[in-house]
Image 1 (cartoon, rainbow, N blue to C red):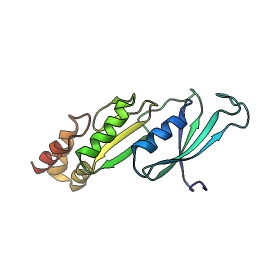
Image 2: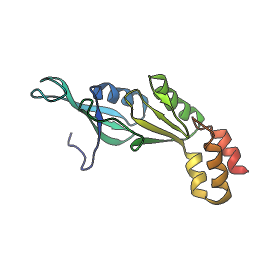
Image 3: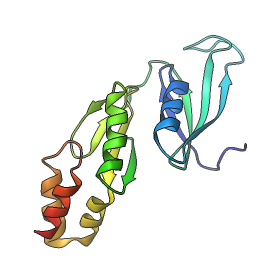
Image 4: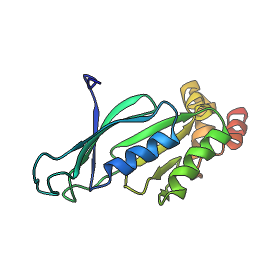
Length: 159
């Protein structure tokens, strides 16, 4: 399979394959399409170690690079997953946090590899797009949450 013209490259210490397989099991329209091994030794590994992994997360093509410990992840990069209801929100949030990840605030969490995820119900993005008092109420409600509570956002939207 040819790589897409634009592909997100995500740096991992050494677990790109495990991360990609977790994402493929967790999110729809996700898969691992190729695992490439190093043809020779490199700064953070040996010949034959997994070097890159081609994978898709919710339809977005990615490459995982096992680059070692030189760089750390920050919230400056995140995957944002739109959800349709509380059940879907809970499923993704619980999968990430329950697999060694950690909760943050306002719908953000981190997986065990340090990648940030925004698990964002569409009701919240719809409220923000509506603007005005409705957006303000939904935003203020969101600011008090870790995982987004769909019912609380819907209530805030109504006033």
